Length: 308
Ligand SMILES: [Zn+2]
Image 1 (tube, rainbow, N blue to C red):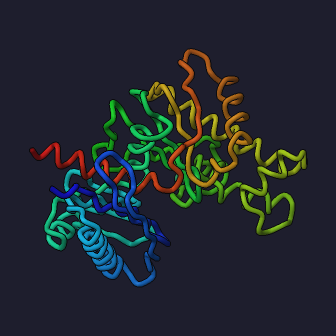
Image 2 (image 1 turned 90 degrees about the vertical axis):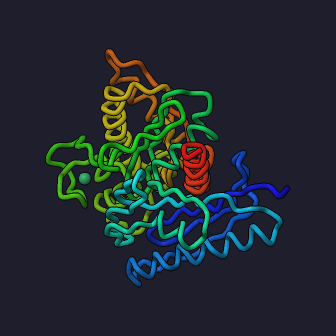
């Protein structure tokens, strides 16, 4: 009998990461496609379904049986209903993606939130392995979190849990895309670090990674911008720890590429702030940008078990 395989897609604002994932979490095949979000949500939806269909064909050609589809999207996602409720960068408004995928591919499907499924993958296959309470924090253009308890993601009542990026850590601080000021995302995302460095140095175009590298070399302006971001991040993580009391915080997203230049000062800044809290381990994500695909595959497999 042929082996089963999961068709997995992680849809972002600019690109889709796609994979065929075996039930043990190993990847058979990977490919990438542009999302073409500027063509509108209907076109993006059609593209997702077409890509998923061709991946299923590829799986069959390679001798596998596609058993489920897992799709991860950004924004607000109603996982139980399988609906992409809202997304700023893809433009989804109440798109029933799960049922559309079931109809197109003829196999069960699951829809998840990109960061929450990434959290699921890190908790079960990556840096959170063996821990029961895991908080994954993705720091890139924005900041978002995903809480995983005993291998299950926590979506919240409206599919909007984990928005750690919009916890206010600097009241009256930098304006945030959400309309508030001083959100963690406006103070410590990779994008905001680049912006803040440009403001103080007058040099546009330096990335957060450049700032980290220059800070490590001892450049004073970079060091200050980096340390400000680290302190804001530590304030955000302390709030999260007060609420969730996790065993491990897994830092992922583009900013985690800074490695120890990020981890060490963040650990120190959190340690400085801890009072009654039990300190979590703070570690770097292990799965890189395949976490979303792996997590959407895990979610799809979980949904198969749940429906038996
Ligand atoms: Zn905000």
